[in-house]
Image (cartoon, rainbow, N blue to C red; front, side):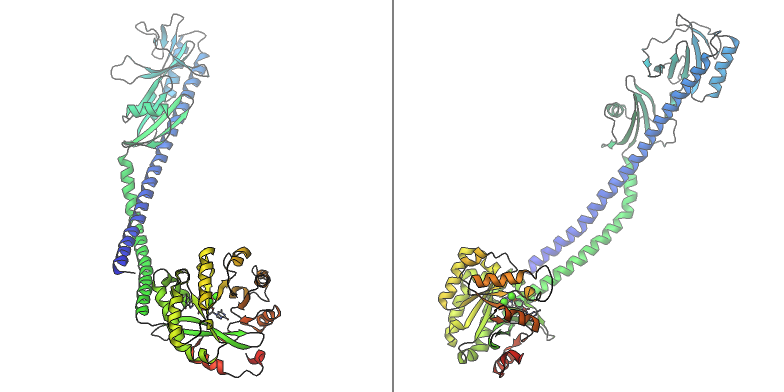
Length: 523
Ligand code: C2E
Ligand code: CA
Ligand code: CA
């Protein structure tokens, strides 16, 4: 990874680590603030509705009660009762009785001094027979309109402020409306336009200027709204608490991300250096003919030695190298090393072979063949003694895979399909490829003698190889039981810790030289 790329990755990481938690916290805080305020407004509007209902109930009860005294209308007794009801009911501010002609005959003040006809406004008639004039102007100058309620001759005047008589702050603007009549009462000057809108579309929400909530029951709509700045205040308070949390998360992200980037950069950077310095070595894992016990060759496995004497496993650096062109140099170095280490042994023993792993890119480009041709010729090693191991991944496209294998055959190499059984190979796919043998993946060998989901697969794999007339190499043989099983199944070759771990060149040559009188028992 280039320094520039690594730097831009760090910049990206820092930006993302900062932005994501901060934007998240801002959004969450805003929504929390908005919704908590909306809940408060919903509570207020619902309270107004129940105040409205209670007020109407009170008026109705008073009207029901006064009816009993109307047998002698406007008698002393009747008027006293009206006064008592006005005094005892908080929302009722007046009562009256009208004659047939609609003129007021008496009120809780007694008989009127002037003729007082009934309002000409069209009343709203409720289900329970109550007639209502929601905004009745009173004679008293500067006083609020009243709500007039009547049944027959009896009427009550209600102060509509009772409908909004709930605990609220100055920022909470309230309104109660009636479907046919519109606004009945408001408090703290709510935006009239918004009130009209919400009466038509009663749903909680917010807009640029206001946050609001609505409660509706029958013809009544109670609306509570506040300027949006109250949400801003709440939002800032929340942000004050949440932002530090977001920052902690950001810092955590940055640290974790930096760790990953540094590790990747260091592996990538060091890998490039290692390639440049030809730092790789090769270990050889013996491949045994399990029918005779003879060692017929070895698989060459790349090793990356570390200053502390350990090795980085190829499982880590090979996939990394495959992401860029480094893999080509590694393959070349493995081939060079094999030729250097094994030329003598291979020339001395014509039946011996070395298996080399080739990656997908090596396989499809065919370049590995020209490298081999040159180096093998220089060392006078017959190409038949070098086998190639390709994974299914390297042979994905059947047609070009067929050609690659064909080219390898023409050059004299045998080709094995590595990690067999872990991919998607079907019988038809395998039939189309002129491969010489398969390497049964060690995960299948590990199931021998065990009951696992994978264990029923192994016999099929072996059958498949037999049907296709392919030789088999079993990988990862660790136990006598596994060896017995594989021998029983007629498998020719095996490799694994049971015979030997991968060995440095000199040790492998020594391994070859060991006399094995009774081959099977030698391990
Ligand atoms: P692979 O080709 O399947 O190689 C066999 C792996 O199994 C080796 O791991 C070997 O050390 C390990 N092994 C052998 N016997 C046993 C056993 O009895 N038990 C267990 N548990 N493991 C055993 P290694 O050397 O770490 O190689 C890992 C993989 O890296 C190889 O898998 C191969 O795909 C890749 N690789 C190694 N060298 C090269 C190379 O030169 N070029 C390419 N392209 N890939 C390579
Ligand atoms: Ca292999
Ligand atoms: Ca393998």
